Amino acid sequence: MNTHARPTGADLDAWPALPLDAWRDTYATLHMWTQIVGKVRTTLSPPVNHWWHSTFYVTARGLTTSPIPYGTRTFEVSFDFIDHNLLIQTSDGTRKALGLFPRSVADFYHEFMSALRALDLEVTINPLPQEVPNPIRCDEDDVHASYDPEYAHRCWRILVQADRVFKQFRGRFLGKCSPVHFFWGSFDLAVTRFSGRRAPEPPGADRVTREAYSHEVSSCGFWPGSGPIQEAAFYAYAIPQPEGFASAAIRPAAAWYSAEVGEFLLRYENVRTADDPDALLLDFLHSTYEAAADLAGWDRAALER
Image 1 (cartoon, rainbow, N blue to C red):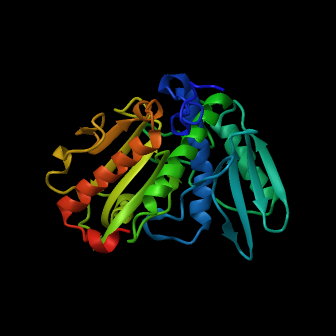
Image 2: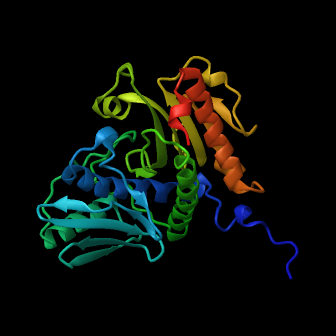
Image 3: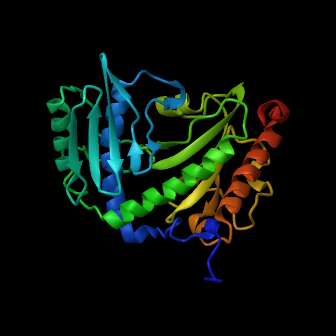
């Protein structure tokens, strides 16, 4: 009998390490691949509020677009981070698979678009990436060409755990709430609660931001790190941000407010090494939501289970 076994919640295999420097190039390439697939879903799907028709969802093997309508047919595109393939499946039983391995974004783009055409799925997308500095057209990008299957697999395993905990958190809210979904533009998994009230337009907002934040929100998520935050982290923010939010008492003690990004942050490393990662993460999610809802005067009695 192993008397030193860790509790299930503290399983470091379920919550693997993800140092940004170890997979930075793979991350950049995979981000562009997801943008290509995501733009296909966005182009062909009927619009849904807050761009919810654009997102991916975590699966038992990777990420999926979910079914995309195409005339009287439908198709789905899925990233498999176990066997490292991209699978396109149609409602009439045809399919195509592309390997995920070190190759340029341009090479991936052309093979993926050719595979769609071979399945009689004609679509034109804007090949310029979104939400990244110094974007390179995906059909011309020979700069990003890395793929480390170990780190792609690790990132997906973290998304599986975050998706599971976020769904527990989501289930405790009765008001309007987003699915737990993956945004390919910013490469993050997120879930968003709504007060039910319209929000003032954010200053200088573009078309994407105006639609995303047309209503008052408290949002949280996970992303592998980028820009000023050079490590994987969980985040939480409120838009519009109520007065006093930045100085609110948030749990756990390791969480902090970053004025640079305007969000509360909790290092992924703090969660993965905790005795009970689920409890620590849920404490962060609940306390940041409570601060946002209380300071903004949400009708919590009506909105919460």
